[in-house]
Image 1 (cartoon, rainbow, N blue to C red):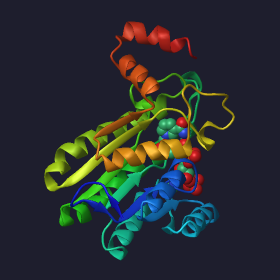
Image 2: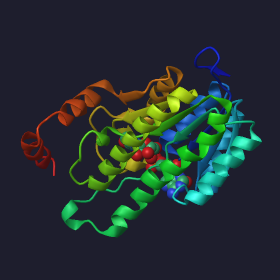
Image 3: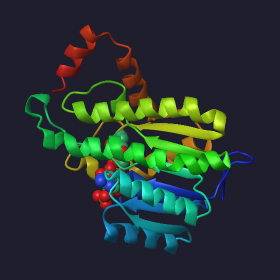
Image 4: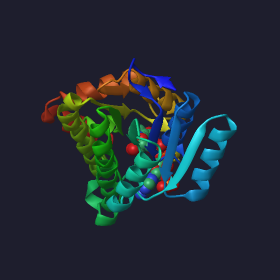
Length: 256
Ligand SMILES: NC(=O)c1ccc[n+]([C@@H]2O[C@H](COP(=O)([O-])OP(=O)(O)OC[C@H]3O[C@@H](n4cnc5c(N)ncnc54)[C@H](OP(=O)(O)O)[C@@H]3O)[C@@H](O)[C@H]2O)c1
């Protein structure tokens, strides 16, 4: 069992988007720390493979097939696991999709799944966990945002906006829920080598999925409000967010 803080032991976790990439790596890291981890995503076979690998390594994992963009389904899945596992101590809204397209060519089809997964899915996942955590007076909610939340990025208008939404949601949840005993952690990874970046060449300061998972786990254990990483790109993006529009726009267009 992971001892995040005295009196705040993490026993159970629910991680969305855990069939591959950062979510699967985080599920492995949590299981290695002794946490029974529920791994949620749409693809059953991939989920089962992750669960088997975790169990073979001596951990405990329960696969749950669910499409987070269906708020009724993800709400039912979180609340069922909350009841069956005697309370979820940690819920991580990690599932996400990114589509890169110049705004001049944007169509609704490019936007719909990003809003469905990154906005509706993340919100429904976190909100579903709140009643049980409030009842117990403890629990940790985690949202996997992105450094793209700092500023509207070229060719990533909807993705940036969806992550800015999630960041703002977590900020407000923290204000409301900390006095009730809950902890709310936001993580903003930089580039991570996963299927999301398939085909991309070497990316600035890119991390492997297990390195990103370790950074997220460290933020969870430290009960951080916000952890943006790795430092060089997080610091650069933070300073971009302070740039006046007159400087940001021409700079951003150079990358289009
Ligand atoms: N990779 C990066 O450079 C990077 C950087 C910053 C932030 N992030 C964020 O980190 C998170 C994880 O990204 P990743 O790089 O690990 O992506 P990934 O390798 O593409 O994995 C995405 C995960 O989300 C799941 N997912 C997608 N749509 C879903 C849906 N409708 N319902 C349930 N699960 C769904 C996928 O599983 P199924 O297909 O089986 O459903 C998969 O497990 C995302 O929120 C992403 O925005 C990534």
